[in-house]
Length: 101
Length: 255
Image 1 (cartoon, chains in turn orange, cyan):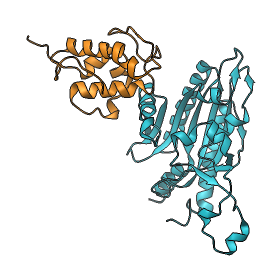
Image 2: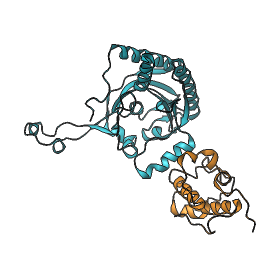
Image 3: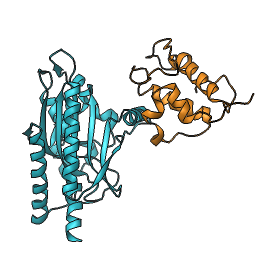
Image 4: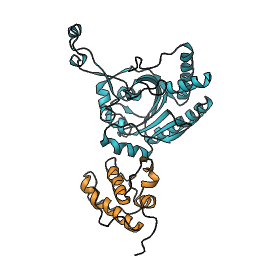
């Protein structure tokens, strides 16, 4: 299960992005040993063109989104425009309103 | 269980099928594809080299002899008397092409077209739509990645025009192969993400009439086909379901 340090539901897009970047850089390499130890992605790193996300890693990525949003992700939404970068994932699935706190 | 793996076709249906395929061969020839005819049986080793059993174990069908023909006279159950299954019933046409060119160094891209009988152990059967035995006309491209992509796109555009000419208007949609094992779910998602498989679906969405499949260097690597730089070639195929086209056209003509 992908680990989230923040409490659900994630309150803001910034929080969602931060958790996702942390997940890819720190958690994913531990569960998917084909990844480099510290991929050092940021919000705009191309996740697929760089070869970072493969057919195993995508499952972990989808599981993260489902856990972070509390919603199952239908396959029809797993398209490149929503998954190309961390920013794209956040725009597609992250909270739409900013946290007031 | 149906007693026929595919519908029995009469003269009129056969004439329609042959006319349809003639137009497809013209399309393929226009793209420089050379016609080949492959057997209905394919070596099990080839299918394994293509990693088909790992991806689609539920669809694969085998041909095996009796281990001891004399036992058949004693009504020994078939399952207890099957020999080694060295052959499979071809699940697709393109695997023959990769095996044919295995180990080759390919200096420039080339295309092959073949019409072949294919076999898949489908869970449910609807004649003309989903059959155990069916025919496909495929165009297969083998070569450098940019050349394969360019040729595939040309083939896709021309097939779209041909389908419209025949009254089979539809649209290309992102699709995924029917991987069996849950562990292959990631492969199916990657197919969607990278749009490596598109299906030409009839406007009513009822059936996929054709598909294009981008394989990257997967088969080049598996079959040791390299380009002039020594790298694994790219491959792609355009597959037309002849039975589905014939069935739709036949219904349209009789209604």
